[in-house]
Length: 306
Image (cartoon, rainbow, N blue to C red):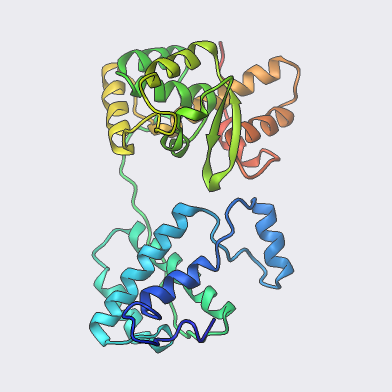
């Protein structure tokens, strides 16, 4: 690997800094692993903690931030190899992005940490120190954690198509935005085929009313087409406007997932399951990596009373 990453040949791109970054970070990918599997793999390799990249979007984000870094170094210092990076270059780069948000700063640190790990695993030396993270300041606002059944009805009535159907699916199934974004016409059937975080696949039962609404919305679309072609920004704006019309605090798309979790917890406990057993079921339905339901506990902190 070390030889393949050096600048060689007559091609401008073969062995370039961008090529080196992409190849190194791709070597860390481990899509589809659970948290337990990732920790076990790290222990088996003697690394102590997970070092891989476990989602496609995370990989794309880290590649983008690392390329931004190496292009800046090449432009300012004319280097052509990652091993030529020095501490002053790193310090200068972070000084150049100091005006950015804390999220950008911390993402850049995370990306370069992964790049450093990838280089160490390939036997390449990269002795640099990254700066500490920056505190994040959240905007002061009223943020709804979940909605009651009556509030959900008001919210759905205030939404226009297709946003009403998108919110209905989140509340009924507890799926993430990424699952809505990836949903294809071919995924609609007796059970809905859902692709979630880290490309986890699920087949979730949906009500006849919701399934028929999906069929009506997609009847003119080819089978490979996306069910919803709206962006996250457009969906978020629709939710903000609908909350204002329904006189509800805005809670984001995760408020719909929390509403599902708390409603579902009540349903399962009324069927005779203990709270711990119910949380495990909900963890599986919501695609949480922790099958014991510890993550789900944050979603189920209050049971909706009907």
